[in-house]
Length: 457
Image 1: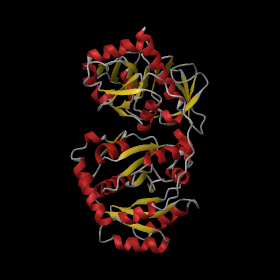
Image 2 (image 1 turned 30 degrees about the vertical axis):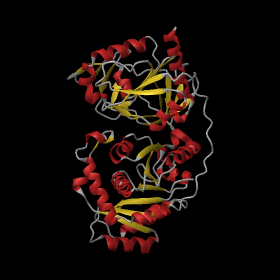
Image 3 (image 1 turned 90 degrees about the horizontal axis):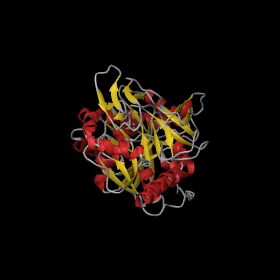
Image 4 (image 1 turned 180 degrees about the vertical axis):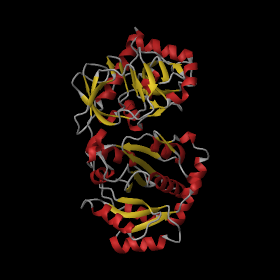
């Protein structure tokens, strides 16, 4: 049976979606409701807040990666037994790929038939806020917007704004949050700072939750969530799992923390045994490692510590060159370079050197957004000519970015060659979701199984 579900959206980035989402999640956790959280789109960081600090299970729902059927399936699977599935939107509600609504929060709400609540910054607002609400809710006849939450408004102003919005639009207003400067969540170039970096974050979130209990209609939101119809997703056909449970070592620490949890679980369903290790602290790969997964993160911010771990760097260098099946995405790709440095040569840290290239900070966001990757040669993940969706977001570039895939922007003529692909390696800036094409997870696990068998000979 589908859990009650709700999507929080906004008219633009910066409207307070994450703050309100965290406040509601923490308040419901404190009530014992057992919510599960979801983030619309490819962002890794908000789910880290939801899961590592609040303690709610959190997953990504991305229609470009997953398509409608897999999105509904994973929403249903991950919501099983939850008291509420709370989905945080992305950017403005209708903002999708290339000025369309594709892969937007609105698209997700429509595909999953999830009621949406609009989070609006109410500072300095009067009657015009009703026009904004009416325009957002009426922009598409199937907008799914069923209510409003006001952010950063005073207790004195709130009753008048609520009455105005409800009279002019007919939509319910489910409360407000006042301006809470001591509960601000800072941001940086990859979005919100990672959960472990925010001092006293748990205390801040409990303050937000206490305020939510006072000024949000949580019971009304739960009732609205209960009005969502059953999902009834189609079953998803998966490849047969690999036998033998080969060990895939997963880099997991402050430097490497960007993974899709559903993707990791799919590797396990495909037969892998995942063992986490820290490139910052561990001097060697886990015993029995037959595959290596280096996800994204912030290796550049921990470059000194990573460079000082000489024994692990040597082992990873040697084993990759001798055929250890490896997936290295974005930050993991940087780690495999010879050196990390800046364009001015002020610092230069030695890395694993799995290929002859150096990476440097460009000081600006480079290739950004969704792409479709098409393999130009057979390799670890797929055969030449096969494609899968991916995403890029990075301020660094490489002297050797690779050219074994062609990346094509959706609804655009723009494309470029990128990434390395061999029978035992995928390494490049684009990151991807294994559920986008489950054969990728099966192929990676099968390669690890072959490596294990060869090691036993």
